Picture 1: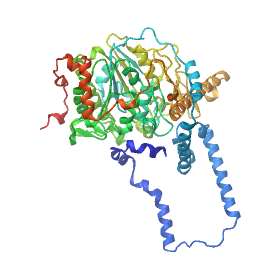
Picture 2 (picture 1 turned 90 degrees about the vertical axis):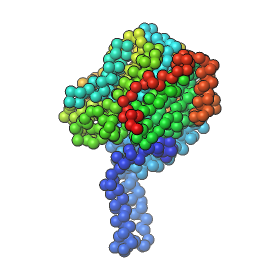
Picture 3 (picture 1 turned 90 degrees about the horizontal axis):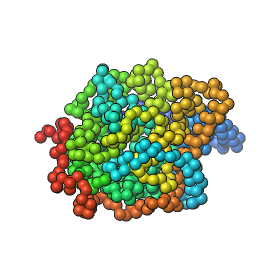
Picture 4 (picture 1 turned 45 degrees about the vertical axis):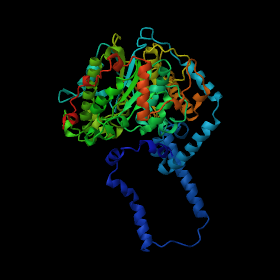
Amino acid sequence: MSIIKSSGSVSNNLSLSISQIIHGTDFLVFLDVIILALLVIFKVIKPDLSPVKIWRPIIITVSSLVLFAINLGLAEKDRSQLLTRTFDNNYIVKYLGLDFFAGYSTYQAHQESATRANASKKDLDEILKKINKNRTSPNIEYYGKAKGKNVFIFHLESFQQFMIDYKVNGEEVTPNINKFYHDSNTLAFDNFFNQVGQGKTSDAETMLENSLYGLPSGSAMTSYGAGNTFQALPAMLDQRGYTTAAFHGDVGSFWNRDNTYKSWGYQYFFSKDYYKSKKDYNIGYGLKDKIFLKQSVKYIEQLPQPFYAKIITLTNHYPYELDKKNQSIAKTTTGDATVDGYVQTARYLDQSFEEFINYLKKAGLYDNSMIVVYGDHYGISNNHKKAIAQLLGKKKVTSYDLAMFQKVPFMIHLNGLKGGINHTYGGEIDVMPTLMDLLGIKDTGTVQLGQDLLSNNRSQTVAFRNGDFVSPVYSKIGSKVYNNNGEVVNSKLTSKESKEVEKQQDEVDSELNMSDKIITGDLLRFYNLEGFKKVDKSQYTYKKSVALKELKEAQKKKKTSLLTKNNGKSTEDMFSTDAPELKEK
């Protein structure tokens, strides 16, 4: 059911990815059905029409229940509380089978509907008690440093932390992102983890701008984005005089963005309809990054300042294929076709990023903006263990190695900011409270599950959507507990240490459970946040002709856009690109 609910919003351009996943041999699963049907048709097998003895179905039923109980017991041993925690339904399929999951998913869908109907303010009050207990104090050194500045959220599609400073044959794959990462005015976090579930990019966006997790299955944006009440960061900034806009080179309906963004307080959403497109301008899911960023300038320059602009790239996306004229580095040689192309699309993303940063500098936006750069989720999945081991220079990878492989870059750049590499453990759930403190937005009781990454009294336990967690001392992956050297230490823990790990697990379970209740019960409809007005989605439209007209009117009312300050002269020529598609006649 969760897959069906999500499919309508994410089916666009999926054929390429699906073709890479499905192979002819996969259809052998239906071979036994075909053979059985043929045997019956040609009367090789004749149905037994004699009355069934009553003891046979009883024995079969009892045996099935016994086998199911044994299977469930084995599953519980490896993944405790499988059916009660349900933080990731992939495990239910893995341990109990697809048939069981189909029925269980139907039950879940019914429960979700009932959850919203039965939810009440009392449910939220219980959650608020826990959230208030875990609130942290802002770091005085950084609080308000970005107040009144423009904000760019630059989304590095499928980009992982291991790519920072990574070299192939002695050549840096992403020299420009590396330079930005090590800039003296950039705060970079090297223990920052993606925490997405099945919703992938949509989960990352939900966490970044709402400090709420994605769902155990499906996508919160797809299932709840249009109907739920949110207290998202764009809406908070909108109500503080910011212009809020999102930019993406794919269709607006993907991940239900065209509806969700209204709920989150985005005044403008520049999707594929706003961009000039030709066949060779596109790859996979939409416009190639260089072409997308080049064309975004004409909209960025019209935004009254200060503004909050989210830029979502997409070329560095599975299956990591790039036309030859845009390739500028050799593939890796792991022998895994999917993995080996990853460095080529990552290099293209890096070049696109450089062109965008150069534009910001030329246009005068670089020094007056807080530029936040992050990777949304893993690019190489755990299905490619052998290739991952080669990339990391290891003989093989453990479950702990794969957990550490979930790190993604997170960087905050601001002119005059005290930069450096911060080693605190954190994740995407922590971005919103971090940015709020940097922007000087007082927390008056915001419902958020993350904590400011710069706070001195924050927790460093990072929850994954499946209920696993990592931390500086102990990490729990499945049933195994690891120390920070990657050693399994279950049998070595003292009673006190075991209780501490149990406490961490309880906190993770509680946090994920609270998030699910908030989203599935739409609990924020019962909450009135001090200084925040609930979003009226009807005031936003993303229809191109109407939105552009409204943008012109906004520039007249507030004469702070880059275009207005430049006396109507466009800055488009300041964006230089080497995109071969734009040079060809």
